[in-house]
Image 1: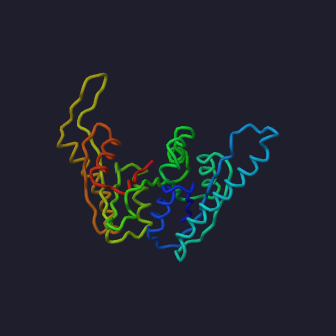
Image 2 (image 1 turned 45 degrees about the vertical axis):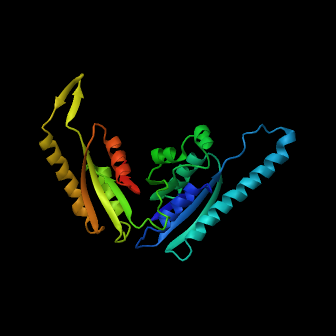
Amino acid sequence: MRVLLATDGSTHAEEAAWLLAHLPHPEKMDLAILSVYQPSDMHRSLETVEWIKRDLQARRVGAQGACDRIKSMFEGANVELSSVIAEGHAGKTIVETAEEAKADLVIVGAKGHTVLDRLTLGSVSDFVATNAHCSVLVVRPTGLREPGHRELKLCLAYDDSEPSRLAVGQLGTFEWRKNTTIDVVSAFSTAYTYMGEPIIFDPATVEDATREVNERAIEQLQSNFETVNSQLVESSHAGDGIVQFAGEHSTDIIVLGD
């Protein structure tokens, strides 16, 4: 598996790296660590040329340090390590590098250093998840590194579409430990609106059909997980229902097809 892990030196990026380092994989992983720095937008007048040079050098050094810290997390692991330092727009550079490297998976932290970064640059993780050619794992801190966090909880959002079936296959590429549980969540709604008029379906029929879809995924996952739970969520919006379920069940990872 070829994996590209992006880091900006933030705690969010290091949380993403820590999670990857603790996902057991049967085959050797080809892991490239990418750190992107963006040059200053300051006008390049004669008076600022030297300052800009020093600033760029400091950003390169910072990017290299971010890569080195991530690399140290994988010492002794079954990985082939490389690092890339690049200048440019973070989101675009991550997407382009992933495509050039033919990556199977891109891993990013959910946020950069500050809220201001998100306001001025947009969400890098959102951009990558939307534009990358391959699967993307967006990691948010859920307390996994805390001593009391003993169980890893996954939520698979499943609707029997081709992308969701591919997500099941991707889950099977890792050797999940015994203290890992997965909830297979299928969302359904019994009320739809057409031309402003509600059309009500038989709730039992819709729920039974959703449960049947859910069970197909469970059959495939039982060989990879010790504990697999079937969960049905009634919601007018599937995304909202899944997010609410994950919050109520302290989910660590949500997996879904594109």
